[in-house]
Length: 276
Ligand SMILES: NC(=O)c1ccc[n+]([C@@H]2O[C@H](COP(=O)([O-])OP(=O)(O)OC[C@H]3O[C@@H](n4cnc5c(N)ncnc54)[C@H](OP(=O)(O)O)[C@@H]3O)[C@@H](O)[C@H]2O)c1
Image (tube, rainbow, N blue to C red; front, top):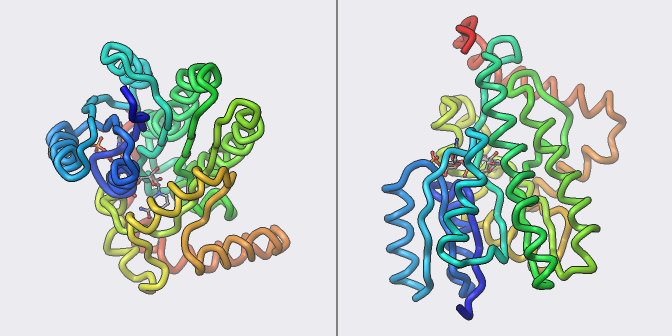
């Protein structure tokens, strides 16, 4: 097989779908994974037809600790190595910490952090042996900003992903492995429909919004160039730059001021959770 293979998690919509398209357009075969098989099959057909590449559809639930192993086993059965890993699958959990169940939070950690780490751990040794690898972890500008009230673990997990990517960036250097944390701001996708915050985030000014294609192109180029952190869009470059130079208490004050405007509607809709 002459073409390299990119494994994209969360490829059934939004940023993951755009990233799969970006890799296919650049001549990579792609392995598409998520839970919704119909969406993956439709994308697979479209990419094979448009770009003449080979695709693999693997359904897996990455909130289940067996998920990463199932994906790698399926690729091993197809005798394909992963040359690029795009860790992207994710969701948002609105509400404050105690307004959510532990099951929701532990699924969140499993999907948004543990599955990313395990997939890297499973594919990186092969990349080292072959002397080539690309690892793109989709984090967020939230990982470069203070924590917020509500979505409690989101910025913590995204921040950990940024640090993780930086470490991989150093560890991969001598093996021809590039590692990048992609940090988008608000991006048009299904994300805010899935977590029920669409009407709230629609109040954001239009210049705050990025397209999934814009984010995917920036991420692809950044990992090709081996940039450890990629923040797409001028507004977010400015905003995250400001967050890095402001004293922490001022950055937290700004965060609090902004979020109280947008989170008020969300908080009133939350009830005490049933433990699950
Ligand atoms: N949109 C934004 O404003 C924004 C900003 C910064 C960062 N991000 C990050 O970008 C990434 C992609 O989000 P998006 O905006 O593209 O949202 P999206 O359109 O909702 O896509 C999320 C993807 O993750 C998959 N997924 C969700 N739960 C899963 C599970 N349990 N197992 C396997 N796959 C699962 C979904 O597929 P199935 O439902 O088919 O499983 C879908 O393909 C996330 O990591 C998110 O944190 C988004």
